[in-house]
Length: 396
Image (cartoon, rainbow, N blue to C red):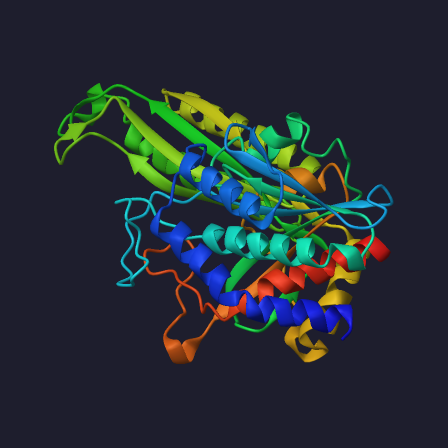
């Protein structure tokens, strides 16, 4: 039996175990940077395979090396994220979240379980390939500053240093059995914008005695869309969205201040910096021109994610070998954001998508929703696919 067929067979054979990992993780989610029980489960599972994981990286991160023959020949890294979201789960399933208000609504339970399966497959076949695979179980993907940035500062890309890194993410828009790839720019940078518009409150029937921050805030929100429509190139994908406005007045009360929160997304670091400067200057100037003041607080988030073209071509070819060319698709760029982008700023990286949708089973909800779930048949594919990608990279 060829190594490819061996890995495919092992992935199928271990799928029930991997599904049990996923269900345990799904039922016991933990928020970003609080994944202590999750990290222990990961480490204990790896130890059960006979591996020696390194624990406590960025507090709750876990790293393990799987060495094949001639382990110093080449090193590549595989990454999974382990944190959950502050969402109340609506799914009525046996593995429903036991932690009220916390849910694996972005598939990190799937990523973690799948990479545990990959670890088992790689360890069992280590006599049949050369090099070293570094498996990274990373905390805090969902919350600034991003666990990836902390783990990089902690030396996760050193000792030994991988030549490339690959990440997998569920994709509820893609049917189970399909795998999606995109070369080059793929995901956007993400910055949080907080505006405090300060005026002078008073009675709603005497606006001449006030400086109305609600009116000022309204002008700012509309005007800032010019940053997108008249400053960003039409060829440069950009999003500016304000999703929260708080004005603690009433029908007849003009408040002293209005608070606005939003997000700015871009796919170019130079334009990202320019756009943020324009947002700050315009908001401050409009408020001042209308007699008020605007305090601008920008929380810088993740950079844009660049899928290295050569690496992406290579793992895409590996996927075609694993699932068949008809099941490998090209996907469009997205203005969503991922802290895997930090890795892509340091070494060649590629982030691909694992199809998890099954309309016949009613599994169609998008990520970050209370009804998100996956067709667990994806876990028959994910572990072996990632193992094959790793081995192919080691021989590339």
